[in-house]
Image (cartoon, rainbow, N blue to C red; front, side):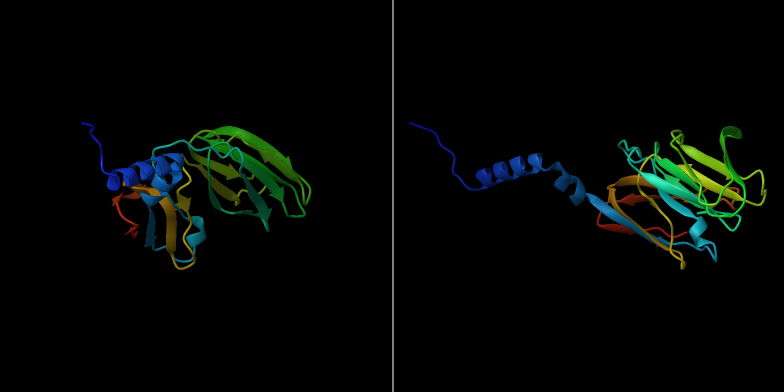
Length: 201
């Protein structure tokens, strides 16, 4: 006597398994969600970063380029986030001498002079995770902050303080609000299990 299996559910499950194995991105996207919220930031919302800390995985900014400009004796943007290895294009849009003096843990990383309007230079030294402080020795009122982050799940709020971070893998995380004007770290723990979660500051 020959044994046999009824076709139907088993066959469908097998086909589904093979399909998802061939397209693993569909599995990850199905388990990802969105973080939304609102922060109190007054008139300086553009100077605040919101980012998820310690997401499993590895990311690199080797193919990314970000611009740090000097306009009317101000660094633009004042605060920016990058992935490690991101190329930063330094630009002087002012008709006067500036220099870009960058520190990491209070030690000089580089000091580049940009004496002419329209002059640019590029660097990709932001390989260590953490905060880089950017000053101008010529104009001491100028400052900027470049934060090198482990993952791409970061953003800035809009002018009203609302923010959104999409496609975050499900899990338990810490959400950090980085404001260079605040001396103490501000963060909140949360669990992302469904399509979205709201975290306000």
